Image (cartoon, rainbow, N blue to C red):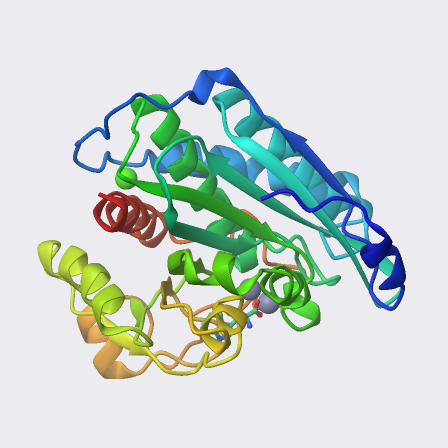
Length: 315
Ligand code: DTR
Ligand code: CA
Ligand code: ZN
Ligand code: ZN
């Protein structure tokens, strides 16, 4: 997708022009025929290494990675550099919100039928109160490692793969709304699924699956059934994360969630472990949302579930 700075964009002074930096590489050059492989295990140590980098970035930039602050742009630069080196075609989409400049990062894996795009996204911004490692470094790091696993495997599925890291979700899904709002109807119709991952490593985790689209919900439920884990429908988030603009535009959406400030019930603790009567993430939107605010098992399982869904849905 190439949005160039244009008179139209300049005229949209209310928001900002879409200034893009697109980087590509022949490393990801697609073969002539799709590859058929099983989804790989996503090494949780790799996901945690990305989270350690995001923590360092926040620590070096006033303690956060919030929209319009240095920590957000440094986070974006980190993710982009990894993807460029792996052969993705990356595009930065610039917008403004609350008087500050924001950025989305879009990464296309060369090849696949661009008439059928499987899109995977997470918001990269934190709140100003803290480093946002679970919310939402966890989703950002997991989809980054999934994208890198595609490259490592030299995987070229039948459908086109696109990954996205959104800016300014915490201000009201501003970045994802900006992206969806600028899709033509044809571009919108070509997105066969949008998968959203916002908080997937909560320290007192739940295993929630978005129930917006039955087929996408089944994909994730099947994965967890294979682990013997009974999931629950994600019911608190309607409209509360970056899948909402896609759903409102008629795109099938799915995703995973490990819980925020709601309290885990006794029945849920009996099923999933952890502490009943305590929040799924007691550091939600707080300064303690650091690399110590994670459950590695949930992060690992959800990262593997993301890879399973990306491979399965793009075959
Ligand atoms: N709005 C998200 C956190 C959040 C709360 N409920 C849900 C449900 C599904 C996804 C995310 C969320 C945030 O604070 O970023
Ligand atoms: Ca794993
Ligand atoms: Zn949040
Ligand atoms: Zn979030």
